[in-house]
Image (cartoon, rainbow, N blue to C red; front, side, top):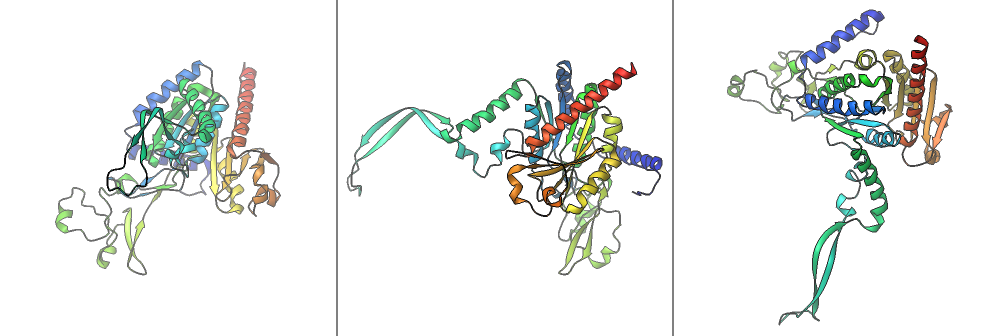
Length: 414
């Protein structure tokens, strides 16, 4: 998409691209149920005058076939989103957790992706035990008789060393469930994510400025349009012509084709083959996913606070990309992070400038990409093991300031 167009023309192109995306991609089967659940959840918290945050989390997949076997994914496990959701709940928000299916979830994250097997946190216990003496059978090599223990009323319990932390997590989870403060909505593909985000954003309009979007999901930048997607699994070998003749679409995505076929393949096919050093290689032709953040800001949820994330690997690009995103989409805050330091350092970028946030315990582990080393200020430091314990209070404070400004504006308008 050209970047040199005048702003009004660029906006028109963006809108056409967004409309085309939703018109040409299939609506996910779960959308109606997700919308109904979100509407009921939001209505409850509107009536209770409670702030609601939508936290998106995990990565989106890009299917390469309609009957998907192969897809493009990213490394995101949903750690940032799941951890942040817990701190938002502690701050008094209700949370709509829009997450990649099977990614980390609030509270269960402490055990579901542990380096230990979950069963290591459990042990057997019994109400009563009875010791029964037994005699070794004749000819046995046993040097002595043995005893058997008859165990009754078995149960499972948590070993003492794990009890306190597990009980703390369990109580927080039970409280969130008891007060209906946490709504879990899964997605898998980029398409299901975008359809669901749009639908829920419009459901959140009654919240006005009490709504927040904390967009921590790792969203795909490219996709295969359904009109160019093959039906069946991409093949690595030849497909008999008799099979192709029997197919309705006549399409066959292959990793290996004859030389004469290569020149005949349409450039609009999503999967094509090019010669490689040792044979053939798969070439996937992807379209850019339209940028929907502008639509979220201007149309889907115009009164909400909107926070996005920017992940980079090159420290020299991070602030530039954050400012570029802020200028392009006109939302409230971009949280930038580097792949190598994301667990203990981020930067907040808004209209007023930059603010680095980091965990104090990692002061001695910084490298050249750190704000402390590069001299970028100011730095907000905090204790603890999770940087989200600093990020979320900062987001909450900014949300409260935004709500206060909007309240003053409403009073001034009369």
